Image: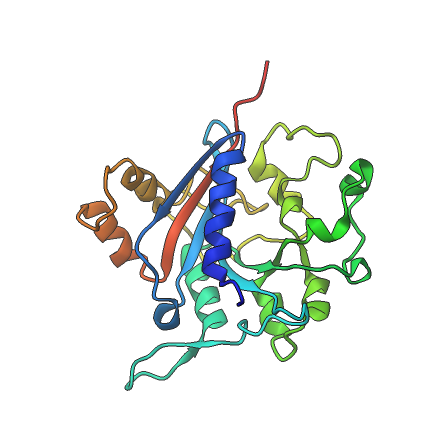
Length: 260
């Protein structure tokens, strides 16, 4: 029986929460009706002092049991009898543009054939880690996925993807850079910068895609995380669901303070 993207995401978030050396805040707004809304998760990677952040809007898709293709990347969403259905990937990109975040696909892979995995990571080679294991989760810009949507195979989408760990790569040093996670992501092999849409008021992305401060969705979500219950009674959760209807929840990953 295939495991759903939601189950893999929940396991990934639990593992991250338990093992990440910094702080992880996970705030689900509501149980997403993905077939109807196509809700995505907003992530923010932040420096230890909170002055810099790198946000992204993420949609997860799993490789099929044959290790061949991602059958759900071309799915349509919407159940209204009056409104036409729309492609989930189009909504992801539109919502990300409104937030001024990069739109990203997280691909859940399970590959045994090492020859199919790009051997382009020097950091893993230094520690002798198997390359297929590093591609358990890979990332791709949604715009690149959309451009190749007619072909849903792994072998096509690996060309514009990279392993998740590359976002926080220490270039084999084992140490985070002076700017922490946001700068590591900005220097990553994949250009994740969000397209700027005119002038902005308040916090916004710089040229390298990192933010000074963070978007209000993360401030509201963090405040909501301090509420004892997630039963929907808090005005903060009501505001989040109303203001960001296509976002299922928020993950804030903050670096641990530098040692010494």
